[in-house]
Image (cartoon, rainbow, N blue to C red; front, side, top):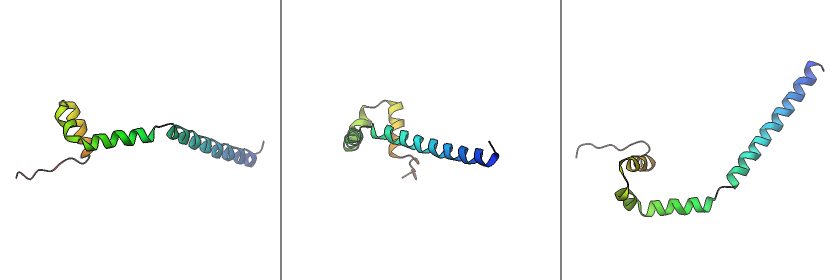
Length: 77
């Protein structure tokens, strides 16, 4: 097999592999229960204060990072 045939075949196989990987990723996403995730997110957002008051220190830190990923600023007042 000459170099140009090899390169064409390699490129075709790489494209096919990339397409199959994208299809696999799409199939995994389709398997997620998006409606269930949205319902859970709404539940958390609607009752965030209760979630905070019932959480321990570690859970509060994680919750704070979710709601305020860039942190909170306090000017002292």
